[in-house]
Structure formats: C-alpha cells, structure tokens
Amino acid sequence: MSLPESYTLTILGAGVMGSAVLSAILKSKPTPFPGKIYCCTGSQASAERLQTTYGDSIYTTYGADNIEPVRNADLIILGCKPYMCQSIIDDVKEALNDKKIVISLLAGWTIEQISVGMGTPFIARVMTNTPAKYGCGTAIVSFSPGLQGSQFEEIRKAVMALVDTVGMALELPEKNMDAATSLVGSGPAFVLLMMQALAEGGVRMGIPYEVSKKCAAKVMEGTAKMVMESGQHPEALKSMVCTPGGTTIGGLMILEDKGVRGAISRSVEEAADIAARLGKK
Image (tube, rainbow, N blue to C red):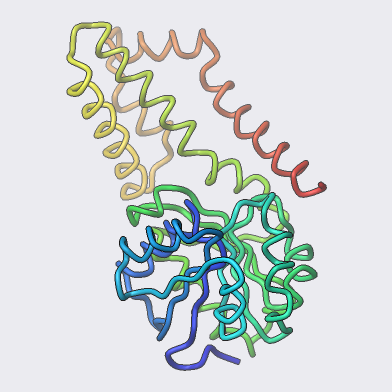
C-alpha cells in the first residue's frame, strides 16, 4: 500500500499547529509531494487569511464546504484544538471512510480514539511544536497497529518524510506520547522561560534588553548545536566550560542551590501527567 501519485492532502483545522506543519511542508517539498492541499477552517476570515498567506499553493474552505475536501482526501492532517475535534469530526462524518490515512496533531487523543472518531485504522499520532513553523521543530510519531507490517512501509516512510519537514521527526511507541507531549510540545515554553531569565540577568547587569535577548537566544541555539553535533553528554560539555574557581561554576552552584535542575525535570513530569489526564477525558 502506498499513497497515489499527486495525492490529495487535507488539513482539517489549520490553526497554529496545522499552519506550522503546512508552512514546513510547502518550504521543504518532501517526496512524495501532494498534488493538491486543502485547508479546512471554521470561518471565512480564517480561510481568507490562509489564502492570502499561502496564495495558490493551497485551496481553502470553511464550514459546510469542508466536507468535499475531506471526501477527496487521501491523507488528512488533524490540526484543530483537541477540545474542538469531536464536533469537527461530526461535521464531516459523511465524508469519512476506512481507507483514509490520518495524521493527528491532537494532544491527549490516543490512536484508538482517533481511529474510532475518524473511522479508519490507518493512524499516525504526532506530537510536534511551534518551532515547526520555522523548520526547526521536533516531532514524535507513533503509528497505529493498522500501519504496521512491511506492506505499509511506503506509507510510513511517506508520513515520516512529511512530518520531518518540521525539522526532525523521530518514531516512538504510543506509550511514550504523553512524555513527548510534555518534552516536545511544552518544551519550547520551558526553554523560553529560561531564555527570558538569562536575558533579564543581562539587563540586571547593565546590558540593553534587545542585545541581552539576542545574546540569550544565540547562546541557547549554539549550545543546542554543540550537543547535537558533538554527540557528547551535556554534563561533559558543561564541565568543559567550568574553570576551577571561575565564574561559571559559581553561577551553576546558585542554580543548584535554587533547585533549578529539579524544577525543570519536574515541569516535564507534571506536563506529562496533565497530558495523560487529558487523554482520559
């Protein structure tokens, strides 16, 4: 089984995450690339805004007109808010069938819930994040039992290629998805808090805010690149920055005294627990 050549992609709910993935797909042009891309929204204003942003690269619909793009879709990306999903599915129910492939971006919705709601066994559950809009996001992908086996290898490759356009796509079993929701989905907010704290520290010591913000952002970008390209453990890289009796070890001791390491780790745990509770509602 494989996607047809020049297949039709329909994004059902082109909100923040749906639009971020759309933007990444259009910039990267993965293979296979959809012949048609429909963006289904809830209002005329949203449809017009998307059409203005992306031009003739996409077709937009809203309201009752969303049924036909869903009917014609070979692959559907569910990109709406989780709390809106059931009503959106109900609105297009007549256009669904058990042959459609669905990529879900919904936090908290299990593969089983999506499969029952969309009426198909072919589900890829994805957790990505807002940096996807800039091509430097992270995505975790879990495939349903219906997409396992060698006969679906081409489908899985096509889905991974599509999702990889956000920056980096990795596959994990669904049991890890709540943790991925926290680490990957909520992670940017945690990092931005740390970035803001670094920038404000610079301001406190006399550096203008705009300069301090750029420095903090670049320090985080460069440090992340150092970890990815060196392959070394962050602890090993951290120790290289610490001169005996120097500034870095002094600052790190304050961070340890204040429990920053534990607070960051516990924030991931708490967000994962909330994701698990959302999935049970």
